[in-house]
Length: 221
Length: 388
Image (cartoon, rainbow over all chains, first blue to last red; front, side):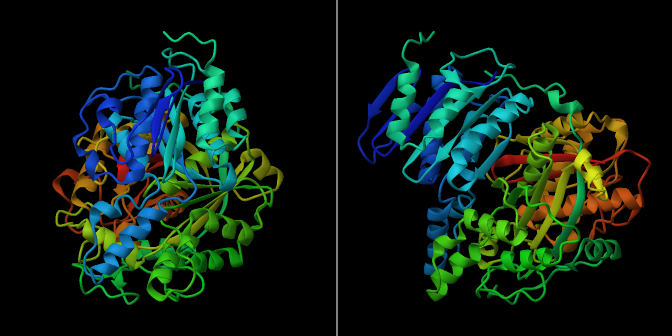
């Protein structure tokens, strides 16, 4: 059976996780990294905006799932992401910057974020996620597809735990799913229940509220 | 902590076999798998000076490009390539097939065109738009998704297709993959100092970077049952796959090769293959110092009993990025059929680590059951396939 054992999310104003029932506001522009990340993240300043949001949402999701992360330790966990626009904002930034230089110099530290899989790549590096890493897009059904692919990978023993979610320009939202090979974590809901919520195609705040409703009655150890 | 382990053989192991029943490709060697195979076997590389955009500011000025494509015109480079290979498919593609499109940058030249000439919308380069175009070209009405996993995109897409078939979700999936040589991509790899000013020399002592290439390719993958029912010619089987991440660095591979070894071990386990079953290795073999060294280190850690013949086709047709895994799978199936391990084009003097593994000469393949393919990409992504 595939279960959801944690959810983390962040947008430009607030962040939170579901099982631990955390929902906090933060001042726009002041990224609350000390409150969110479990250990020092010295290089976070070089990440693009979407990667920062992604890493924060993944940090909160893992915290919600009770998965402790320490530097240099790797996990049998994968990550699958999606979004609406791919890496479009960074693509524009990179190529405009290159054109502004007179088509002579381009910036490698922008270029590396012109892949839609890069934000989850940053999360994999910081948290030591050594399972499969993919970006999937499927038109209007992308989130459902990501969740289903993650569940399939757990059933097929491709990893013990999978993170699945969306990394948009203004928010990130990640599930932690587990299969039978991982005994840790409190169960928020089944995969089927999570899919029912995802299929409603809600905005971030509505989705958070739906999962907070599912949480009612659960005692978190 | 979630301990790392090599998973048990998955529950679908006894499920349907995923077999390749038709394929095609267009590369710098020309149109068709046969043309590509002959080009590689000739030892000739297809790398040439770039005339699409100025390379005066870059340390390198060459790439392996497809002849006859028009740059910054109505159709993107990858759409032009897809139109050529889907114009006359070698076998019919069932409309009810699933579709998986693999790419890193897809139609990024549409963004370039919009910013350089003011024509069109930059946002047209969204991979979902290309997915829709490929659906229309192929007539596929089934479920369609984009898979992007850096330069392991096609390998990951093939793995997903095979998993869908093994689990019985689908009995026919078309995997299409593409990427092109554009100023956007070329300037980026140049900024990372990843390009060799000479044609790439994978596993060579003097290698100093990769050559970019472009390609579009497809493979129609079916359940063995449906392939036999429809009397399709079976070109080979996707027997195993494994995906992993180094979790180490955005652009450089792990020096230990542990992440790739994990992907290879997963792939062999899925296939039920042991060391002796693998006849050759189609390596990622980009020609960068660190990638090739990491791969050899990984191969040595997995294959302890004997050296395996290793080759890379990227010296011949360049690094085709998101398409690389699919082009390489098609060539590996041909190598199995011909019982011949292709040469690594441009490899003259193997690095010490690669001696006895990689060679610039073609070699006879043994009677082993399988070929192993490896790919890697930015974000530390690793992917491996076992084909038979």
